[in-house]
Image (cartoon, rainbow, N blue to C red):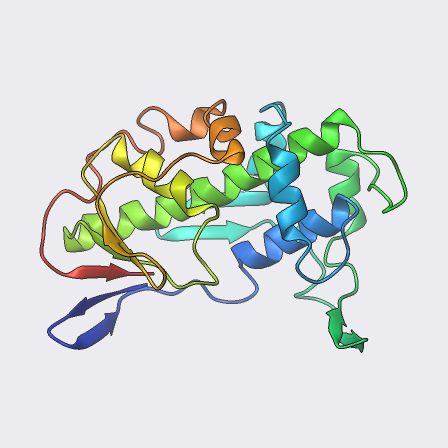
Length: 224
């Protein structure tokens, strides 16, 4: 995370391995029975049919802190075991990233051949919401330090779908966002089905996530 101004980028903050929202979401994708590289989009689609029933469990996995976030590493393997990536037919395959403790918390993992139950839909929704809560927590920290209202997001780390980000931020302030495909905009995009479902969760409302004025001043672009 950093601030870009006058042709230069100043890096102000980092979240170091093994704490990673990407690894959190990949582990959840595996747990839900989608083991292939890039299967996260299936979880995003499944979330549209979920309800916010398991927020407390997800908050045990990802912890928000004063200077960022951390993973509860008792639920993950990537920091204690060598997990080599294999290549099959040109696509990478990964071993499990989660420990039996995750199944103890959420229930038995889903096999790819198992039917999809309502709890799998619910975990998909609340996992995406947990990702977003951590993202906006980082965003709020950076705004507090910089005062800027302009935001640039790297393609591989921004929350998806992007309209969800615009919609939630727009509720509190006039936010200008930059990305490679669409350029800078200050208006909210159209909500996707996941964005509509995500509105059901308490994370997009109230002071905990977006209650304080967010991105309401300054001239530089905020880079994450």
